[in-house]
Length: 395
Image 1 (cartoon, one colour):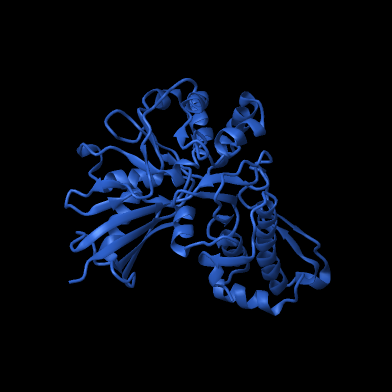
Image 2: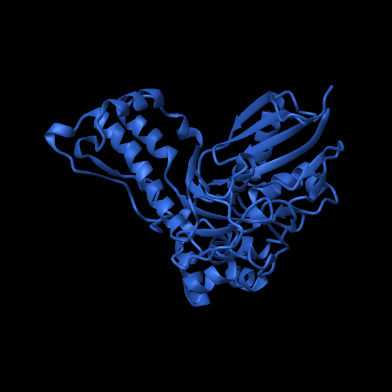
């Protein structure tokens, strides 16, 4: 039997697995399992979903699998005690309760420019640093028992290598580490001073940062566990992004990103100066509201996503004057964590389901167009766009 490799996408909503031929990359089998809804989760649920997705793909025991790697949702906070057990449910990237703490951190370091120059990214509620500050301020008992801080991808990689029942050392990669707020892409190192600032003087253990060619270890059965990365970095790697190309990803969140040979530092805060999975950089703009704008509008209209798409294509561009401002769960870009959505321009003649469906699509895409403009504003050349993500399937 030809050797196979397994790719894991542990996203906000689900865990997806592909089993591929190692020589050709041909996808042989797929598996999928849902994640719990909400903005916090027991990390064990991710592990159980991964096991279910592997069973679904016929790869539960990883027999004949040469290597496995995880691409995971970025930013979240997995806080572990000295024995490797979570001190509380993990806080996900889309949990906005830490917005006031993010603003405090920006002020305490001397402003947005200081953060952009230090780590390439200005703190918002999504970043791990802001979540650490929230934990320190609101759950000091849990904070005092936090011995190790990991990201979702780090935690799953560690579990694959044996986890707390083994001598495996937690590891991450430079792509996912660059979304914490305390690892510098330009310098290639942790900024422990910023970690201490965020966590009120505490210095928990952090995962070692692997180079792109390094492995995290092996599973107890001997399968190689590669470094893995964050989900957006994984998408860029899989697409083989070339200079001049940019990606618009329409998933739970919306992202616009491109590869760059140099680090970026946007003091305006819109463009996050991440690292990528190859040793270069990944300037990225993220919105909280993308595909869920469509699913929420479909629910409001009492139709499925296919019917929503058909309705939207019946309406003329401009949706008859209806405008949906799609900040349904607050917003990250622009940084408006407490915002809500608004439907504007309602008149007797335009209040039809097809116009509302069209306004939802246009509201989502106008947000992404603004994000693309921010990326170009950092002198990132964009000559070709690649559209990916669940909502990209809509005709």
